[in-house]
Amino acid sequence: MQLRGASSAIANNLYLYRKILQLKTPIQATARPPCNVFINHRGIDTKKNIAGLLDHRLFRLGLRPFLDSRNMKPGDKLFEKINPAIRNCKIGVAVFSPNYCDSYFCLHELAMLMESKKRVIPIFCDVKPSQLRVVDYGTSSPEQLQRFSRALEEAKYTVGLTFDTLTGDWSHFLNTATDAVIKNLAELEAENSSKKST
Image 1 (cartoon, rainbow, N blue to C red):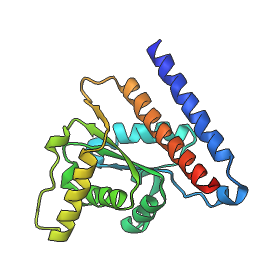
Image 2: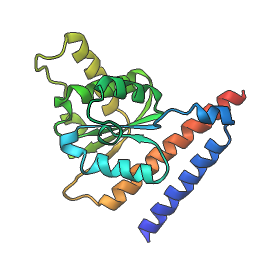
Image 3: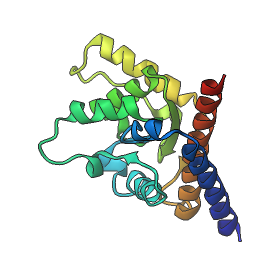
Image 4: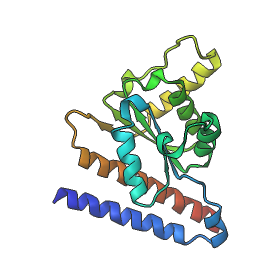
């Protein structure tokens, strides 16, 4: 019964989000960004579980998530695809995992999301926020390390979701994460609509 209630809440929020999108004029609708949710993740930890499943769920619901393995092909330049996707998305989902901070690209993407003032939903997957630290491997400049540390600290102090892949309820978690994404998108659309009408 609890799952049915969660599915109903997701359906209601998705209906509200789609209704808000229908209020836009045709010109605005054609100028939509290619993705509305950017999924920032460490591939070796989460691509085949949390990030991949969330991407699949959001895509099936008619949203436009960006996940590198689905939205990019061999030969694409990373920065040429990822940076515009971040700039054009409405919200970001940052899936933190044990190896997340070892990746320059994860930290770069997170910093871009935070610097562009995107709403970010943190998901702490098999890791506590206090365990996340930027480490200097000698490959990043002091300025980049500081930029990454600022973004990571901001994300750590943002209300998010936690999940333990060994003991967690996958179905409940995916419903909760999907609902959080849809609610945030609906709130942003409502805020943008009210700003345009004033």
